[in-house]
Length: 575
Image 1 (cartoon, rainbow, N blue to C red):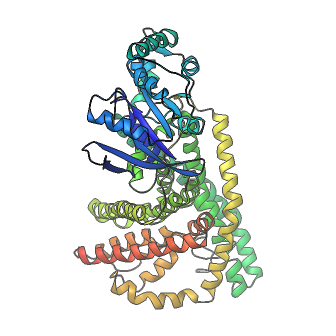
Image 2: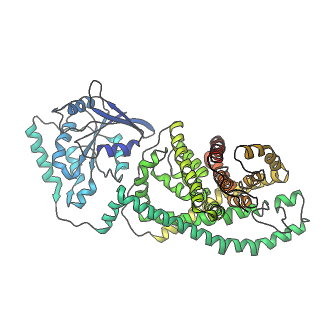
Image 3: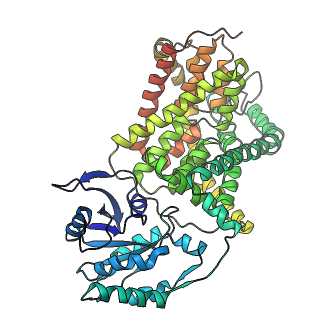
């Protein structure tokens, strides 16, 4: 199917075109002319359709080369989307009537619909639709409002029965339509409408987005850390730890079965992170490490959704995210990944295509350190200067951009257009927010926790059997030769498979230079995600894509770590 976007110049055709096709477009000149046009692709009912942004024209009675080309291109289209400036309905309807006289199905996009409200212009859309005999969809190209309805209406595009004999007859009919469907009154702009407009305009919208995202991040971190400190850690330490110690005594305090079920005793005690037992680390990882951030993030996410801000944030960032092969809603897993990678991978479900979910999940696991890892980065590297922390985060940010662009250009498939509703701002219905939060928590507990427990059991058995020691010895030359880290760092990397902050903490036990701390922090952030993220990644992507993602992680971690080892000077030694 070939869809033509036609209309007067400066009616928002190009913005609607970008909403429908994303940013992967082809710019060309019409054969034998200097008149340019752009084409792209979108999906309609599961099939790929070509969309062409036809040069702007005021009439199909050509007065210039651009209008001649528009007339020629009209003969090749299967469907025409006539883009009309709703604030200039009378001027735009002349070309629209000419299109309706042609033997081609037409849908009308009544664009700049928000401006009609601001200017006190009232248009009876149903009446206009009845007069013209084709679907008429109000749209706001800048925010994406109405684009989803426009796409749905394309299969129902209709041929109109309108027929005119002269220019004067068309203008007379236009005047008659305006008298029937349009009224103009004086109206003041409400403050909520001003806020809605400001939040999708690039200059003001980006400032608002920065404030909202930073505030949300700190609230998520505050709630998550306090849930761990004052609820989950006390529950495990005061209630569950005595039970495990009694079980450990009953099992003789050691042996293969003891180490698999309870975990290894460290200085005669059970440590929930280091003991690696199914009932110790296996329960602590999903419930005390991950669940608090699941609760805090999904609470904030629900509030942002139900106030109406999240769709505006997605629209605002849509073009930038398309450069990475994603669309605006990828900001959700991106933001979540800065708290915990597990819910971030789960949040990739909001993305429409398998390709997008793979790119988003891989970027989260490689370039976004979770909040506990960030705390250790600040603790280990930050005490020697903020500039060193900036190197770590700057490197990860650069990896995020470069890897995203690379995956976007190497992975086959389309990056779907962003089709979302833009609701007005409103106070969140708290009962609905709570219900969604409980539903999402239940989904995590049912889907992710059993997989995490099974994975911890398998990893624990391998650890007890000494398989990890063999891996450490085997990879030591790579760690020391390419990354410039001491052999002991191999153990930290393996521990990072269970928990990144514990792995980073193990680096502090060795005598390292600041350069080695920077390299170690970057490599541990980019290497295998923690076991909880790893198993959820398997659940969401499948084995084949998981292996591809892991291969990318290993390759980029070694390349970036090796490059830092070569580029960075030796600063000073940590004692």
